[in-house]
Length: 208
Image 1 (cartoon, rainbow, N blue to C red):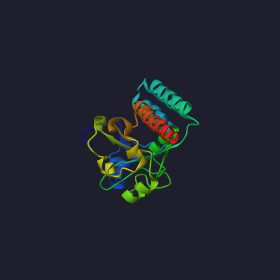
Image 2 (cartoon, rainbow, N blue to C red; image 1 turned 30 degrees about the vertical axis):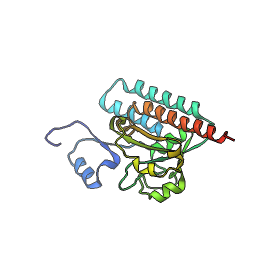
Image 3 (spheres, rainbow, N blue to C red; image 1 turned 90 degrees about the vertical axis):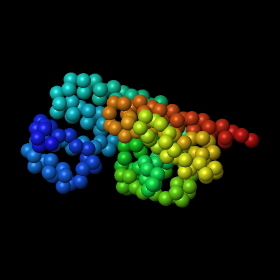
Image 4 (cartoon, rainbow, N blue to C red; image 1 turned 180 degrees about the horizontal axis):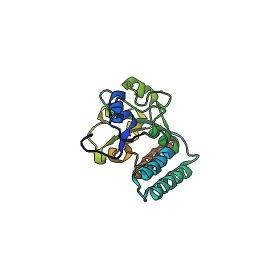
């Protein structure tokens, strides 16, 4: 990196150990550390990066992102809550805690992260804990939204509400794991899949 002589180094907050970050700072180049923990923080990040890189399109991108998020909030406000397990990794089994932006996104969709009370950003959980939570939807993300079998382990638990309802969801990791303007599009799909589970649950409840 020193040989490249950059004018700016942008770093994902939890992507580097402290020693590596300190080494970057010793290069004498401005280091911008970024890791938004809220949806509105993503728009702020776009604006800051726009100022740092003199990108004139940053303001429009941030405004469009905020508008899309506000519309999703408005559309899903007051809807019946749906419980969701978000699976980050299968082995070891990992999820997202309360401080992760996806937990906020789930609330925006009228859903609840079944492990939102856990403090770590990406805590490890047990299969038994997921079964006890009995989520209505189980979500994971893979590049290109291609189902690579990450959620297959749950299919053997036929009584699990997410399995019984057919609500095992694979999102696009390239969109939902990156805090860019495209995230809003993937969150719209997440809300849509949660709505499908909500409608399915209502149908089941109405059966005699």
